[in-house]
Image (cartoon, rainbow, N blue to C red):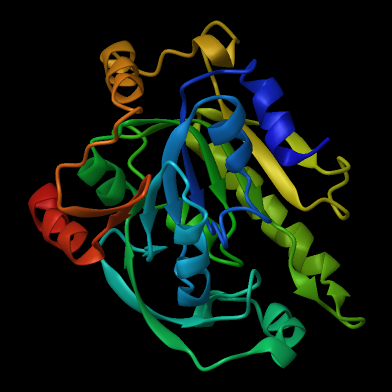
Length: 274
């Protein structure tokens, strides 16, 4: 079963939701969110730092916000050097050495990219409830998640790629892959609000590609999960506004895509954290 279909089943075919896909690539071929936009009437946010993918992403005419940046590994804006290598690119000094060896033939000159904490981005959009987060950034997933204030942002389902390529045979670096999976499991266990529900595609620690976590609910039903005193009102607000996305900050509309100016998010960061 594909990742999108699994998440759809986990959410009981939920309609009118909001996704965030970080590592959105071209917005189609590798997309984990396109199914929800087309089949379940969702909207959301597509984050992609690689400028080679940015134009292709805009040309797909997705009904979502588009942001050419990366998620920060700190609770403040940062500027990093990105190693562009197609769908396997990422922050240069955050990728494992096995992965760098694996992509060696595809390495291009590094580029500077602005990064922002996830809470800052969602606050600038006026979003406090996310139905599905797909995080595929080739390395620093845990560091990015450590910046999240879970009391301000409620995410129902999170999928993360944990496989690390490389190793002696330039295939899967199994020891490093298993270590990363173990670290992810410990991180979510420590939050006290998430449980692991699957490894995709085959349920094997060593052979898996993505791990899936869902938010714990008092009634055990994720499609009825209440995440705080104002959760119902907040969720209703963001779903009501999905047909015509509106942002507090300046944006440029390209057909149905809304391209967010990351400099203006930087300004919003200053007011958000005071």
